[in-house]
Length: 286
Image (cartoon, rainbow, N blue to C red; front, side, top):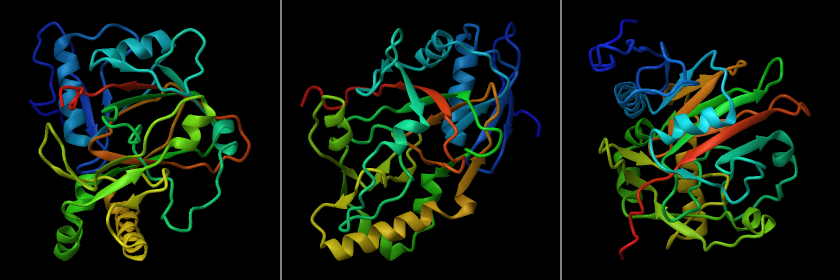
């Protein structure tokens, strides 16, 4: 697919980016850039424009150190250090290891609807807006990741369900994991239907890994609504699926997409490194 004028870098001294959509509204691969080197403002702006349009972008054949990954992410905003980060030298780089997931408490909550579809740090009052994930150690096959266009998921709802969800909030509870890391944080509730601050799109936004509950709604009714939302996330026409290879990097907008990590690789010690980009402190002065 040809590169549009919007997707080309305007600077004459920088190469044009090769932006190839993988699905009509979600996911695009970007070539023509070496993320191990500092990127210009023009390249940064072109990547950000593609990210807002496609919600997640992918880069292949990138050979990055942790420092280079963090430097790339920092071109898009201040970095956030996750409270469970165990990186010895570079705190914003968060190790995502298969062993960490197997050690989690998977006891189901019968009053909630749980699944792997989620968005990063939604347990915070102001979640991080961006995530940059790099493959470090991969199984020979398996371990793909799915991203969902949360705007399409919302637009595909029946009108009566949209009206039912308007004004409702959902809780995201990360306390057990935080307590295990020696931290505490109150349970935060966010609007189920959010407006993306840069695109204006309405987003269907629930983290199903954090025992969601809809505030002010009967448990049975809340579970029914959550089940409807989860069914939207699972529709293939709203998704893009990415197969990781050595040197792969994904950069996504947590405000516009949810994602699902497919753990079908047994006990292989899969390892990814993630860097989170902080959002504006929207409520600091309230």
